Length: 206
Image (tube, rainbow, N blue to C red):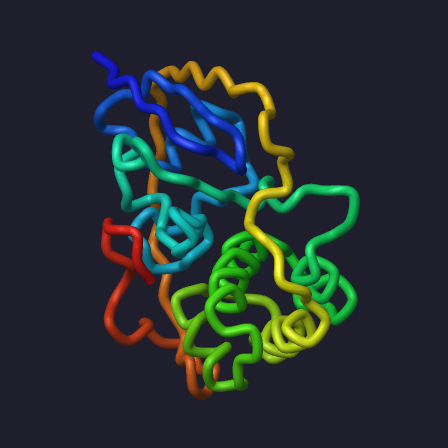
């Protein structure tokens, strides 16, 4: 059995027949082959699967795909355009990405922050990214990149796809995933620990 849903994906209308047990992560990776959204811990802790639902960061591994009905979803692929997004450019220039596994989730969390707070302080950046785990950089360069993007970023929308673009036919097939464990980090010091407040809930919120 599958459930038909209609939503907006990276600025374009999308129709999908999705299994009722599928998460947003299942739909993106197994149904739509949008592998920019990473499959990390599977428990909403690491932040690797962060996407934007109606402009708010969510953990794609925790939210059922049927919750997308009538909503607007943005993945890292939605930032594609003729030029890099200021956050992508800053991450590259300042060395904020090493293995790159956490980068899509980091960038989308940072994008949500800058949409609501165009000039954040260092503590505000750390707080916004507290649920995104990075095992490579130590977070210093990531915070620097977000602040640099904030200085250079002009006000824009989340969609780079022109209005009136043709719908995406999002046919899906059932699949399976195996989760693994992960831990968090301190928004204040950058020290490894489980983020305060726990992982993101299945509703579209931080």
